[in-house]
Length: 431
Image (cartoon, rainbow, N blue to C red):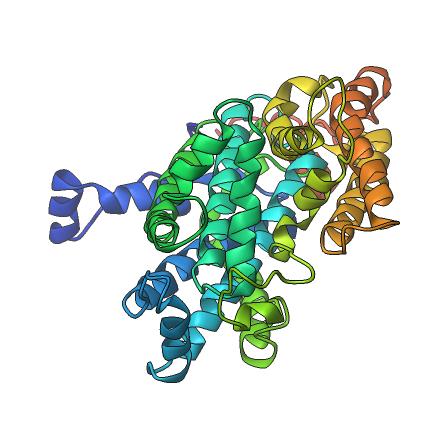
């Protein structure tokens, strides 16, 4: 979004003038994250998580490239090469723990970022493209994380790959050939490991490219804010730098304290102990589970235990699992309320905080639990409510809800409404 009051980049040093003429990269950075990019003055700490997600992506790329220098994508030695990284490579243990826990940190940040979108209506016009690109980034993250979980070639890596790729066999006619094509054989082995390693190395750079598009799309309409009110005047904005670089810096400091505490003091807390056992195709683990950030969707997959009108339960579970994410693509059109933020939509706010959020937590708990009662029944109820929220409750609420009055401007939201303000009388011209 072009603001007429935005500060413009004017290089003073001769070298910077030459650089700006030949390759205007400093101007691009200045206009993207500097004083040349005005943002709403009322952004709170919910808006820190976009920057934190970008930081997590950088951590994953840097540590991943270093780990790839020592990893061997061969089913015969993959597990041993991982142990070699942990035991023999200088600082290899830290790189691996930073990478493994960095994936969990990435998903924590992104899930919070998505929840902020649900809460403040960030998916609504004119920011639909920002939201759609964000969902694409999330799908790419899930694919990258799954393939990365296979690489250590422990028991849970092997059997997780077997179960997840086995889902493709539920597709009628082409399912089994598609599964064999993905694996390069009839079961996870050397061919599958090579393919997963190649894609796991490549996809983070694809994610980075889509992130650039995501940020580009953000700069066209400008950032949203907790009120959902659009920017009207110069007083509604402040320059991104130094106001929000400082705020993001504080948020980044808090994040790094928590992240490093996990890396150094509880690096295996989020992992599965079976993955420290070499992969054995002849020994099935007692309880096969993916990483924790897949648990809500894994619970939806397992919620379907019966066939329905000749549609196999396995196929219905696969379709439901993917639909749980694909439904997010339609949020800009499912929510028809003219008011964006749930701050002024009390009914929606209750459904998000006390309906959707607990429901996803329950799904996550059931997804990490054994496929037995009562977890299956709870998963079925929670999965049903999940889809009801987006497909039924959200459209109905957006139609019948009476929103609270919106502030006239962002400045009024920050400073409060002044009912006693009057126009200053015109001053006589100086003689």
